[in-house]
Length: 75
Image (cartoon, rainbow, N blue to C red; front, side, top):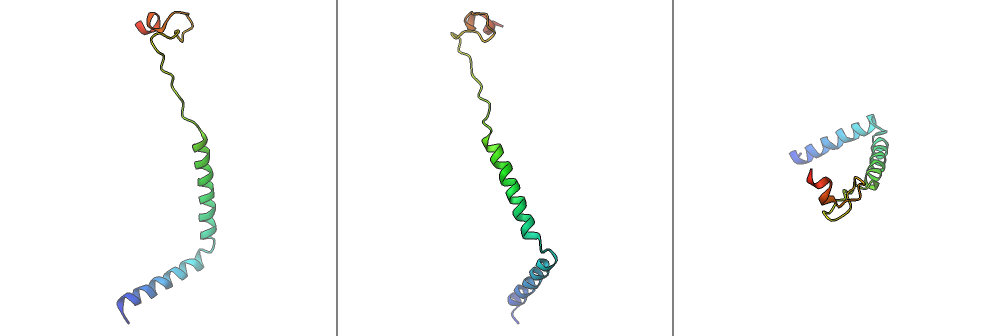
């Protein structure tokens, strides 16, 4: 028998033995895939925080009423 065919046949036997011992393997992988997919969807839905850079001529975010450049930017 050709060594390549013999190795292929042996691999087939090993795979069959694995499937017999681990009958719920595909079901567990499918369940894990669905769990990870739902986790990924929840993460993707969250929007990253958008930081708003205050311009020098905009009102100061501290609430003083002064322009940012005359208030907190000089710190």
